[in-house]
Image (tube, rainbow, N blue to C red; front, side, top):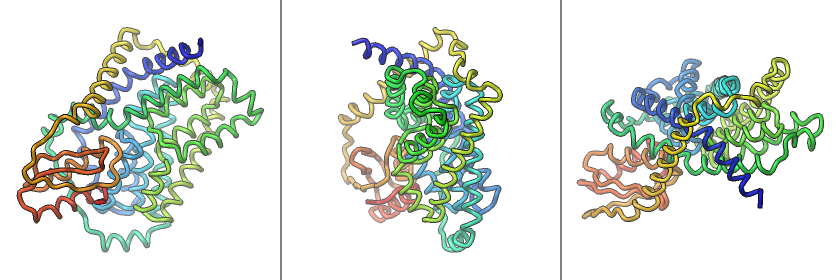
Length: 413
């Protein structure tokens, strides 16, 4: 009976540690959303060049988009003329670390690990993008001559400013809510169940090597967002796992999963997908070994393990936890309960089945795509039913609506 209270205690500890930092990350992400709309991101990623790869990586690093939400964004950029290398770089850098996950990493593992995580993401994304451009140059040149660039949905500065609360509450928090809660619960269970020194005891002297391979095997097919994976990694380090193995999990888990691999294959082809997976695996293991070497030489392991969690006053952490709980409760009430009773009367309802929607970010992207067509109104996206309902003044524009949805990176089912 003592186990359940301990799991509860450990879960509360992790939640209280990450809440205020996650809110700060949301604030930074909201500012980035206002200053840098999607149109700016797409505009700079056209050619198969080093510049496009560097830009796509730089754009992707701070964006708090999960591994399922990044797929349609990348597909839209690809449809708009972005090179395969730039697309792959964006697909890697964006889910691996964002403003929110960076703050959580700092809160649980300290600034050394947080900075190393960003550097690792930069190296992985840039190398993969360059390799894809080098080995797929002929295919890329052929595609550029036949591709038709779609015009992305345009939003004014004031439109983004007015929708900032909705963006943070539904797109950012909504995209990671389930994964974040599950990740914190798993971290609590690990802390309660696994004894300290578990990895050294049961994996022997080569525990660092085997734990990195284990995290690689687990991380590639598993769906876990960057924010949710951080508490899990922190709890594993506290139980004796090497920092390098935790880094492998943080680099592979958010960037890959079974669904995203299938979508990447469809988007950029077999060769680019192989390079994408090989680079993530090879660089993750190499940087994991490097981090362990630095940890041994400079004592980084002790810095990570004794990272001070009392930098911020307790009242501020508790306030952050209360606010985050309120936001989570409101999100679930709004999306799971109230929306079922919000019936919009439509005289001439059009329904379109949309495949590829997996989170609130996806739903909002589809809604924006439909609203971009003149004459549409009362747009309602049903995420669970994978469809969008709307009214339209001219039936001939229905095909335009479908084209906009496809241009946004989704598929008409």
